[in-house]
Image 1: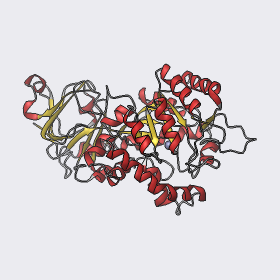
Image 2: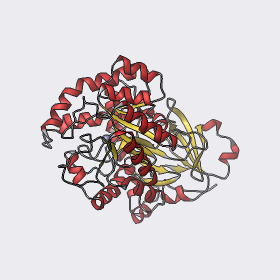
Image 3: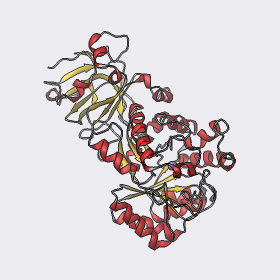
Length: 449
Ligand SMILES: [Zn+2]
């Protein structure tokens, strides 16, 4: 049996069997299992369950680390991210950002997101083709960051979400790609597929933060939405639809959207339609609360703040109706412009405030999130053969969901079996060496058994 004094980089990258022993296990589905063990081998989960039931053949020959008092859960997933967002006050500012700056922003933001315990995100709208570039650079380990399910530019109509610059400007590489009618729609989707996207992001309604279209307006026709989803699905791509108006939600559900983003306006009919599909709702309550909280301080545009005031009761009612009806809800923060990247776990606090139980909020950012982004076969739960994306927490998120926002409580972020971030990961190697296993914090005190 190997030895180690703490949870360090070497331990997670050694390639031998690592036994996280005597931990509290939150597997992404069930309530906490006390006195559990999680076994990581070659980047995957070999076992997760009661320590007592760990088969001897998995225990023998592995390196065991005692995690008494610490909780092991799946790495978190944010289903609605825009890594290029960087303190922009409206969508015109987003469109004015160059691809070069957007790429730098995305690289830096990706590091903040992984440090916050998010091992996977779905990027649902970028500048140029930056999300695909970041996805590949992170997968090749050229830069740190979460695993990315990448979209291209947001596909919207003329005067829709991404259409923000004066008409005589050319913004073909901006945040929005404006298409009108089924022929342009098919062509744009095929162009994005050529660019390597995993997901298509459609904007079927207006948005608070754009100049022309309001959230209650439906900016694509049923025909356009249906064609888009049919085309994307035929190529094996998922579709996320920005839908804040009543009709845009129904158009999306009727056409088989994989996820409905925001869902600001839901009524009885859309709830009924939701229940007949496998679509998942991503309410992005941070989009709402960040404007309510910071709108005045950041001097956001008047339309933005006024629409949010109108939308607040509708949005909360819609989220509650969906939750009460048992519609699957996944977590997505839509962060980067008001709440900064790395505060993604605020969304879980808001989901709890909207009526979800803490365990449901955890599922929204793990197992249900994996389903929403079509990665349920590999991530989102701690089950044998899943990728070993783990979050080791000094605290109990079922008692206090906000503990996940406190990075000093995130002991380690493990991505595919390797230490990606965490308190220990952030320490200088020399500092670690100088304090071999002797520390007040429970992680460093983790000891070999
Ligand atoms: Zn968004």
